[in-house]
Image 1 (cartoon, rainbow, N blue to C red):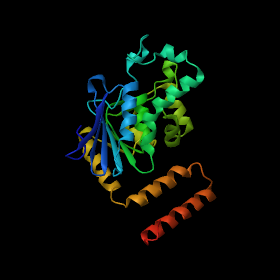
Image 2: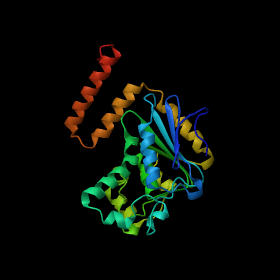
Image 3: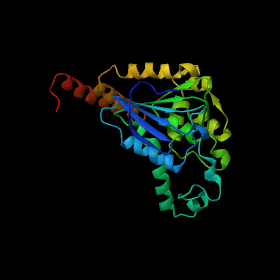
Image 4: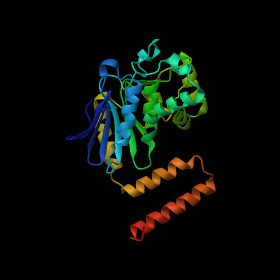
Length: 267
């Protein structure tokens, strides 16, 4: 799979993550296909840095991966006694105080949080396996276009753990509580067609058409004025936690800002 667009400026390239920018579109690519883009704390820090490095001109962020798999999840080295070089092992994490361990996991989670910022729309292009942390990374994005060979699975529970990289909230929001519980508790694979049917994917395409489908979606997302898109995303993201009347009020306030801006009366 190749990046959408042509001439990209490389902003960051480290620890299995490459960030390139072309005008209003940024592309974050997982670049370790030999290990099926398995994840590690170093990769998570690189993803966090990618989010911090986005130019203000960027409106859409595409998340993609090199090779046959989007991401096979946490690198199996994490489950060895020594873990990753220079990183706390699972046993060392377990021995930390609650406060210290909470801080470590919170730092890991930062790699998964910035994709839903109101000033950007994020699109995950998923092929092959998206397992565990890979599934959660795809869920971190606003939208998902998937190849027909895509397979999602949340295997953490089978390992005696829980999905802790921010995936539970979007999974429940998209698929509903009962389906989310069944997916997590069984660890089964969710194939592309089912992912589209239950709302985890917006579009399923043949693998050879994944790039083109992403380009088409990106182009469509860039048509509307940026401020209107930002206001709309902000409204939609807050809708689930607001009452009906509060959402009505939020719509009025948002439309007031838009009308005044269009009339040249904004701040």
